[in-house]
Amino acid sequence: MKNVVFIAMMGFVLAGCSPRLSPLYRDYEVAVDEEDVFVRIERGLEDAGWTLTEAVTDNVVATEFRTFRRWGIYSIEVELEVAPVGGEYVRLLVHPYRQYFTGSRSKIPYLRGSLARSVLKELHKSFENEGLTFIGTSQSRDREGLQSD
Image (tube, rainbow, N blue to C red; front, side, top):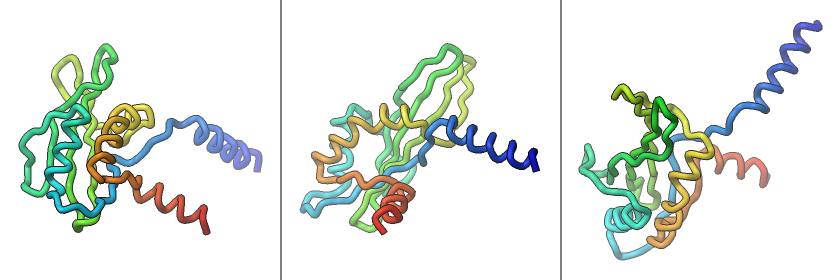
């Protein structure tokens, strides 16, 4: 019984000490406007300092990599993809990578809160100016829905 209590207490301690992680996407609601949503996305990305590049598919707007952190043996680089979803929403996909001094690269499977703030701060403002309102992630919307019930 003591072992079970100890394990449970350690689980709570470790959960409290873990970094705040968030998904690799953010959603925006598109305000009704006559202007093409792709033009608004491109302008919003450029206004936030991102450089556009050719996307893999026609229904996505993509950016070049930007460096956000340098940690000695590796740096953190991020690229973005933005895709309209059903005409009413836009999904921003964040692709963070560790770029090692050796030239190799590895994908980071989550966003730490500090990196998310660095990447998204200016982008939220410029998208808002283009009529794209930040509505969070499905997890944050679910959490808000549960709290309001």
